[in-house]
Length: 269
Ligand code: MF3
Ligand code: CO
Ligand code: CO
Image 1 (cartoon, rainbow, N blue to C red):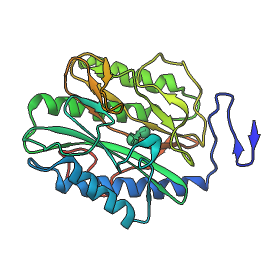
Image 2 (cartoon, rainbow, N blue to C red; image 1 turned 90 degrees about the horizontal axis):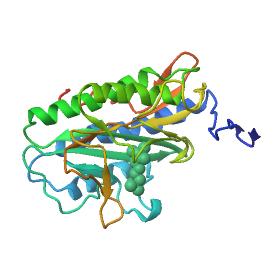
Image 3 (cartoon, rainbow, N blue to C red; image 1 turned 180 degrees about the horizontal axis):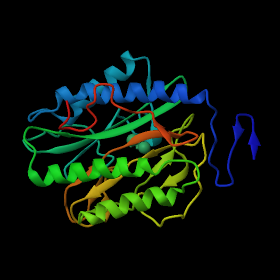
Image 4 (tube, helix red, strand yellow; image 1 turned 30 degrees about the vertical axis):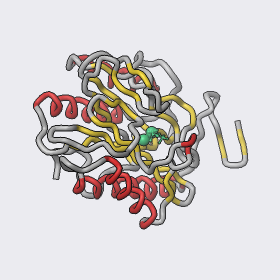
């Protein structure tokens, strides 16, 4: 299929051009910088609303636009998901306490390109079980990214993540997935974090998408709270998530949202 801006596959996945990688790198870098900077504010006693205020300010100062403010009525520059919150936690009055783990998810728009990334943070001291969960979740994302190359399928990505996570006796959330992005926030395909080898669309050079596995210490089931956003584990077990935006190259992939300060993982730098 052809349209004004190039090719779309039979699965509805847009194929971007070589030059488009630059726009995605710039947008991804802005998101990553903000996620680097907010790390210095995370501490017991701080509210998630204060973290979001900081993020909102930095989004503006970097000349970017928040993709989440105004998205389906969402009003914040980030999602902040604490402990058993799986994703889409709404920043507000919640005060962080020692040992809390949290995911902060930021999406910015720069020159029309979307940069979407999230990572884990710790307020104060990290418990052993939370440390294990965060490590497995981080590693599952990177193992998924290792599968990104032309000729592999989206099922190969999901399978690699699921096999790794379940091998550590943790569970992969099924109710939320990664997504195509580029000049839009959420586009085909749905990037599942579970699946069978060889299933799903075949990866092609020029595809841009996120991988963002959510991993629970307990069971995979989630429910959405009455605010219509906050997703929590049904069994109240701890949950973690990491997200990168990536682009498929001729022989692998580029990660658009790499941390410039090497702070992607909470125990680094
Ligand atoms: N950034 C999230 C994602 O990874 C989406 C957040 S939408 C919001 O796709 F409205 F909840 F902010
Ligand atoms: Co995303
Ligand atoms: Co995100």
